[in-house]
Image (cartoon, rainbow, N blue to C red; front, side):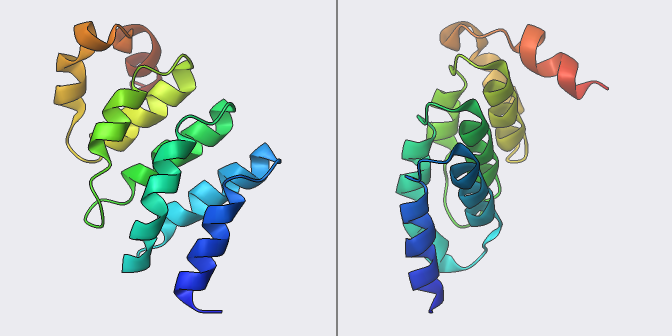
Length: 125
């Protein structure tokens, strides 16, 4: 199986019924460095809307690791509004890896999320 075929297979697994399988696929795609991984970005951005927080956390991490291949920052900034604090923390870390924490903090009032309450305490340990 070619790399492109493998990525296509993984993309299709983002729709799997098993949340653990979806999270695992997102994690795997995030660690692939080949240029073909760009094909997975639209599916990963859609997966930021997955009903399971575990999947959204994995997707945020995957998109954060794709620096240089793609710029997922607009989708990640939107995901800062997620209702789950673990997802928001994963998004902030993903953006922080891209040097965007300052921009996230500036968006604080706009996004109406509590970065001080949910994100920062977890990263000060």
